[in-house]
Length: 60
Image 1 (cartoon, one colour):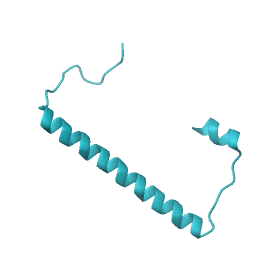
Image 2 (cartoon, rainbow, N blue to C red):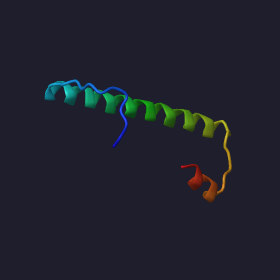
Image 3 (spheres, rainbow, N blue to C red):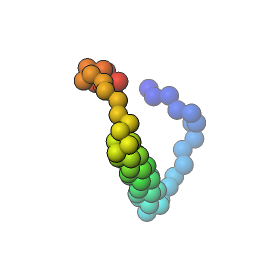
Image 4 (tube, rainbow, N blue to C red):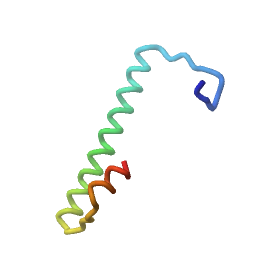
């Protein structure tokens, strides 16, 4: 059985839940786009790192 921090639950209406879910996804997307922007700047500045494919896969 998964362990939870609290034993109480909160009831959220479906519309509010859908809104919160969309906000969460939007924030995730924006954070991802910021990381892509930073990666493009680093690549343009020549800041790169070489790593073997095996090391990359094991890091994931």
